[in-house]
Amino acid sequence: MSGRFSALVGGELLKIRRQPANRPLLLIPLLVVILMALLSSGSRPPASSADVALRVLDPLTLALQVGVGIPLLVLAARATGQEYQLGTVRVLIARGAGRVRLLLARLAAIAVVAAAGAAVMGVVGFVVLGLAEPRTVTPLLPPSAELWRDAVLNVVAIALSLAACVMLATFAAALGRSVVFGLGVALVWFPVENLAAVALSAFSAVTRQDTYDQLTAYLLSTNLNVMVQAVEPWRGSEVLLATPAVRVDGTHTIVVAAAYLVAFLAASVLLTWRRDVHQ
Image (cartoon, rainbow, N blue to C red; front, side):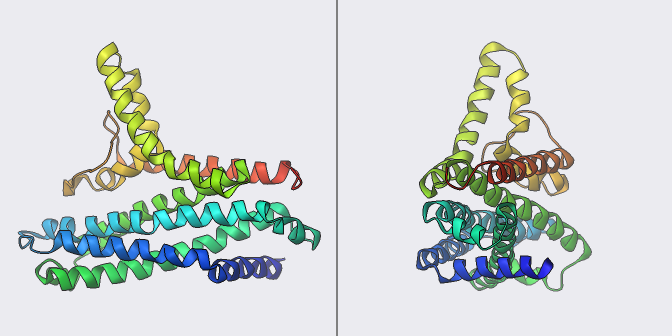
């Protein structure tokens, strides 16, 4: 059983690697790394160890969330939607592969791609940042215990953010059984939620009811946006995008993000299991 599943995962990895349309996605992390280096170039030297963490970990975290997250959105939506559009899912099922097992194998393959992409981009980003502004990176070597602690928490935030991109796109593509529908929903989800957070805060101010403010604490995007700052409040780093209108802690952001991931996964499995492939 495990051998058959690993073969399915290998097959999904092979499809991802051989699709020419996936190759341009490599340009996105490259452009993000270059932009990060340009923004960091010429900055003032760090004044403290906490300042070093803010100047290196936060830019790298944001670069990984955006530079790897966007390609994963596209990759997951395309991989799921094309199975139905091209009819390949029917061939695989006819050969004895279960629909849910195929879905899980595809998710496992994308997880491998995500882990490899994040690791490579993290190293490249660190090197590029060091070349652009050596004074920022030099104090990190060797890393202190506090820096390792902060780095681990940042990795948790990155992992949840990338997982959210994959599961959201997979759910959208499984729902619409279309690459266009999956991409459309996945790409607008986070911008819409950010705008919704601002609108809810405005409604709360107009109506003088905190109900709308409370709702902002349960949006996926706002929790992902503030997660690094919530799990590491001692660093005092800034948030660039929309945040919950009420105060949330690190546990809250992780639980809410995990709940969305479970919901997306459950919905994707249910849609794959219950709906016939001829629909």
